[in-house]
Every structure is written in structure tokens, then in C-alpha cells.
Amino acid sequence: MSRADSLEGYKLCEVGDLVMNIMLAWNRGLGFAWQNGIVSPAYSVFSVVDGSEPRFLDYLVRSDEYTRYYKGFSAGVIDSRLRLYPEVFGRLTCALPTYDEQAVIATFLDHETARIDALVEEQQRLIGLLKEKRQAVISHAVTKGLDPDVPMKDSGVEWLGQVPAHWETGGLTKFIGPVVDYRGRTPKKVDDGIFLVTAKNIRNGRIDYEVSKEYVEPESARSLLERGRPEVGDLLFTMEAPLGQVALIDRTDIALAQRIVKFRGVEGVMINSYLMYWLMSTGCQARMETLATGSTALGIKASKLGMIECPAPPVAEQEEIVSRIEWESAKHDVLLAEAQANIDLLQERRSALISAAVTGKIDVRGWQPPTGSSASTETRKTEMV
Image (tube, rainbow, N blue to C red; front, top):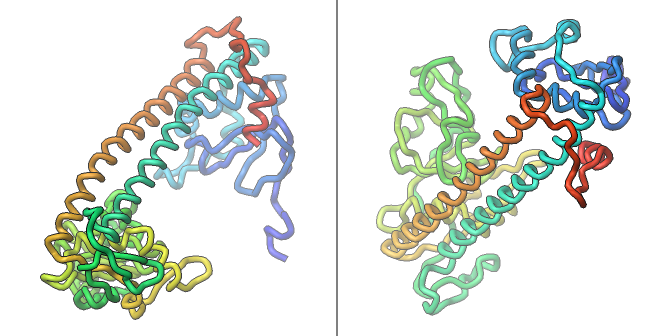
């Protein structure tokens, strides 16, 4: 029997107990339990013994001031290794108002944070709709073209349906040059060297150099790229984990990891940017899934790329389609950036409001929920469960 199966080392927690992840306390990895249960050995459990209001304490222990306070007493060199041990946490101090004032502050924050959270949800829904609309623009443009009156024909591909009559259709490998597969090469990682583009870096048509930062030594990079060095404009395609993400190479001082292949469209037949948008389209993504294998992570073999059908307009029309997609995407990107900025401001306001209330910088004594408000202890407990 394994440790997890036997529950050895697990701890009981009851309603009103504080549960803390010793590795993430500095990053708000703690909070009060609103139902009875058990937690893993990585957590510590504390009981409230002075009669304080757990709802108030829940805001207090996760406020900006107190999480910074925890970080100063956490042991470790880098953030990912910091640990706040229970005996150290137990010696930390805090300033508390009376129980009645704690209850008022908690109710005030329940109400105000609920309002802010609702506004955040609205912006998140807007972001979702904008992304859906952008995806619809891409999918329509690469399958139907830009002219609504153009004659159509049956593509001969059931899932693709009709395409403009003057477009050619065929398997992907018909329209691309040799596929360079980096599978099977495991480079030696170093702290400082050549940037290694992994499948995690390839997202939504671009290489995101911030989401993951790995490096390989120059000699290892040269060995890795013997099959084909990156050139600006090459199309990168992830074969698994995740499957079907694409991006155009924008710099050559990089190495390419496993689970990535690169190729280019045949000159005069297929431009890489159109091909990238085709691979991003909803229909093509669904087609890849039908060809993929794997239980935990879907993947596709390079030998199956020819089974991904692809429509090919004339090159001049491909360029027009790409220009239209990029123009529409730029408009969506502005709106997406605005919505994300609104979310960031709302979340900053939420944190600042909590910190101000629990540290007494704003006086909410005597505050009452507006008439008809649903703010209550039970509402908050239900949401947190």
C-alpha cells in the first residue's frame, strides 16, 4: 500500500481551521477551511484559539502586507524553493481589531470583492468572445476566402466541405518542402547559453519567449540543429504536448527541442503565413485530433502530416487573406489588451481594498450591506467550498 493510499501523514482539518502550504504561503497558498476534510503532508493546519472571526482572518492572512511578511521569514534561496515552516509561522504576530469589528470588515469585504469579481468575470467573458470571434475570422478566411460571391465547389473532403472553385486541395505534404523533425535529440541544459524553443513556447501563432526559458550549450545546439538550422519565416509545428500549435521563426539564434518540426511552403505555391493560419483554423485542428494517438497527451507522427488536407488558393489571394486576418486580429488584440488591463486594474483594486480594510486604513465600522444585497456569511462559505 502506498503512502497516499494509506493516508499516512495526512492531517484532519475542520471548519474554521487555517490550512497552509508551507511552500506557497508567501504566494497566498493558505486559507481557511469551510468544510471538514483532510489535507496532504505538504500542508500545515492551525486552529483559531482566541475567538477571532475566521472570515476576517481569511482576508488578513492573504493580504499583500502579510504575504510579504511571510516571505521575509521563509527559508530558501529562490522563490520556488521558499518554505515557511509551521513553527516559524506560529511565532509571527498580527494586529487584530475586536471580534465585532472583524465581522463587519469581513462582511464589507465579502460584498465589495463580490462586486469586483463580477466585473472581472464580465471582462473574462468578453475576452473569451473576442478570441472566439478571431478564431472564426481565421477559419472562415482560410476555407472560404474573402469574396462572398465567388463560385464554390465540393472540396472532396467531407469535413472541409465547399471551397472556392479555383482553389486547389490536397494533403499538407503536397504544398510544403522537407519536414525537419527534431525528435530523439535530448540537449544538455545549461543556465546560460542558446535559447531552446520547446513546445511550451509555441502558442497561438507566435513564439512566446517568456512562458518558458531553457538554454543549451552552443555545442549541444549545433548537434541538435544538424538536421536543419532555423531560418526566419520557417513554420514551427508542435507534434504533441500540445499538438498542433504553430509559429513562424522570428530569430535564428535559437535551438529547437523535441516534439517540434519545421518546414516551409513550396515557393510560388504556399506562403508560410497562410499555411500557419490554416493550421490554426478550427477545422484543421479538429482534423489533427482524429489523426492523433495517445491517452494522456495527444500526438501525431510526421508521417501523418500528408493526411492533413489543405486548401491552396493562388499565392496572391493567400497574401490578401493573410493581410485581412492580420488586420482583423490587430483590432481584436487592442480590445483583448484593454479587457486584460481592466482585469489587472480590478484585481489590483481588490488586493488594495482587502489590505486597507484588514489593516485599518479605512474605517468600515457601522457599514451595512445595501438593501437587497446577498452578501452574507453563508453565501461566502458556499462559494469557497
